[in-house]
Image (cartoon, rainbow, N blue to C red; front, side):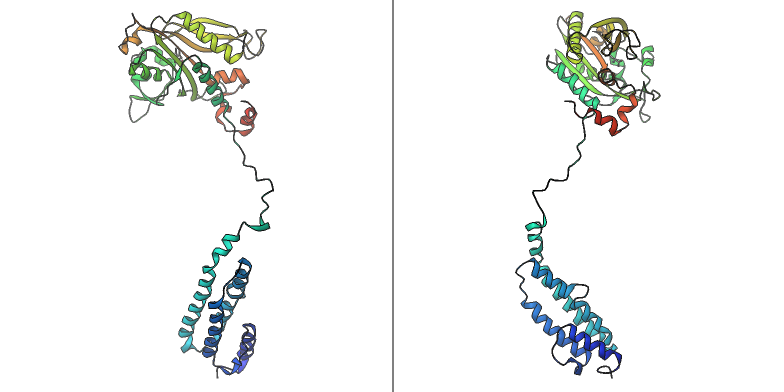
Length: 372
Ligand code: PHE
């Protein structure tokens, strides 16, 4: 009733032909026909030994491809009587697993040959990997540091979240000291004693605390101030501060050291001038200007037509500060200075808007690509 008659018989005949069986399957009931087919294919699969990836691929197409034998035999399930479907299903599944396992067994052939032969031409140029550039602030910071390293300064760093003692009090700025207002400060709300450091002088204070004299350090790092962001101010920026403490350090040493720095950074012939100023941690204090590197004094927008640009603050370390760290001001003296890395970069490269440094605009950053 099920076989050799009706419209299924023609389909079955076509299928037997397509799966390559020469026996007269039309006379067998579907279940038995399946078994016969599978037996034949199993024999072929078991003896299959591919020599190369091409043979393996031919096998995959023949058995496991979308029009392959496994799919076709599964299609034959619909001719199997219902009461035999379960048995037929198990038979087909184990046949499928066998066909797949054989393929897996030799799949290393494929990966072993992948990448060999003419498929990849290794002589072709590779795909370029885009390279980033060094950030102009980092370049200038490195340059500042290496100028001071040449005359014996070493680098010191410290935390960006600082306590009140290291950022203010130890630097001769006790609580309620009006000088604290010069630096609008971010306080950490969890602990009123913690601030985002407003200057890298906090590192100098930590170095003095260690008490290894003499001290000759340069302290680069990021600092924070509660400023409204504009072309001329930002809520974070970078500083490089220096500290030198030893016996017989004088204001002449301060001037000579900074003059050397300016000559290295901006070239021979750059003039310097010192203007009296005030910092709580230095006495006397000064601000240092250099002759304008753009107009050499004839007047331009960088120097606001004065011929001079301010680059740093400096002074002799205040005796109170030395005492705070048990250093005897009668024996030791020292000088300190601090400069903004953004400011030096602005003078060197005429960058007029502070915001450019942190906008990550590659059109800005790429302009510094070719610099050493
Ligand atoms: N810490 C000062 C500032 O941030 C700079 C400075 C450092 C001045 C050392 C004098 C001596 O403004």
